Image (cartoon, rainbow, N blue to C red; front, side, top):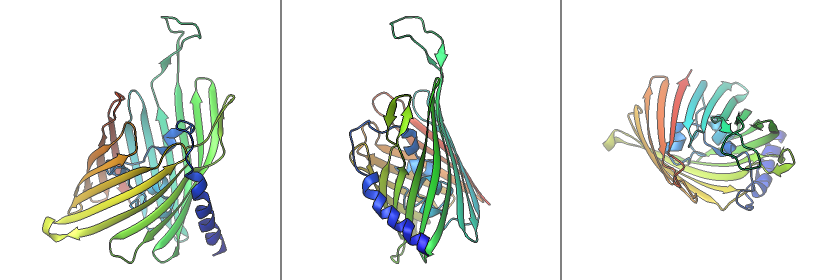
Length: 303
């Protein structure tokens, strides 16, 4: 049990450092904060105390422990302009705990290349992309409380320049004795700064604390879920995420949420359809400042 105590202590110590705000724009590799899965996105990304599916590798490694069997989440994000993301997450239950894997890739169309001197004619094109791969592990430390950790590699490339880094996420997940209530906390993207040529920047660290409440309501033949996350990033003021979901007989789900504290983001909407071991989800996130709206699609498999 000693290593479990060490992990909990490390999480508590890391939280203040991960959530200490710096100047806006001081962190890089911001794609590491883009959520995995359309269900979470439709619920305002208030998912830290909800994520009992494969996307828990991203939202809260500690929430992997209750995930039974093998689960797969595939997601496609039409972000804004020509930027898109491809994400794949897997969790697998073993007798020693739950294992998780996560891939995230952010890609964009080639851009015109120009010299330092103004010119109307581009000098060809260049590309850019970001990638991350994570492995995770979680297990119960006492009944109703689990912890988890995720180790991830980060790679960014712009034309001929590239940067490589490593980060750690650590989370805790608790099912309360109050029926329907779950509590959680995560410290994310803890790692050393990355370097592009001579430019150094910090990873987008953050701390999240979250809570959720779920109950069956016989009069509407379904289930309601309310969620809340408070996020403390290292490069801005704290932000609030609120989400809600109504699930009709666990077949059809309607979702909505709100992201407060963002310059260009706010309300979120979406729905999901479940059929046996398959789930299909969609989320719509209006984006301000003429950046273009966000469409997110998710596909889930249970084995």
